[in-house]
Image (cartoon, rainbow, N blue to C red; front, side):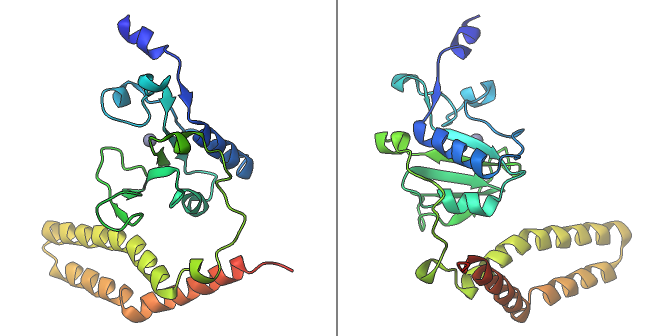
Length: 221
Ligand SMILES: [Zn+2]
């Protein structure tokens, strides 16, 4: 009974995040909302989470989850990463935060129980400004000049995306080798890995991706 009373206590989503959600819904009206969330479930309530209403501050909730389906994840990440309102973002086993020990906003491994591969988690700072500032999240400006990722940055990003897959692939091959006593399989796997991860290949991918970005971000007459 006590738990039910707790669950019914009023709460509200921070104005800044409500504004973000409205912008997301306008941008992608047909998006899937299955993995969306604001207020924490009982599992969240048991631990420290920005999804839990802060009852010392009239029940404010300082985090949302946005389903990855039907949106452009890259655009959403670009809108929230480095926004002064945001404390941290979790997406696909990685976390980027404003205040981590290393470089602010670099992506670091996230090994929480939920891999966050179906939704993007966005937490805001525990400040009045972060909670109430409803300024536009998706900036109209396209990346140019200094904002434009260099070919090297793109290559690094491509490598980051490929690396876990390659590791999983190599792991599968090792298992296969153990099960079948077939060292050939492992050798084939290592050869395939070496073939994909050549500097030339990464450079080629980076150049192609950079060209695509340049084309996409060139203002149309
Ligand atoms: Zn979350």
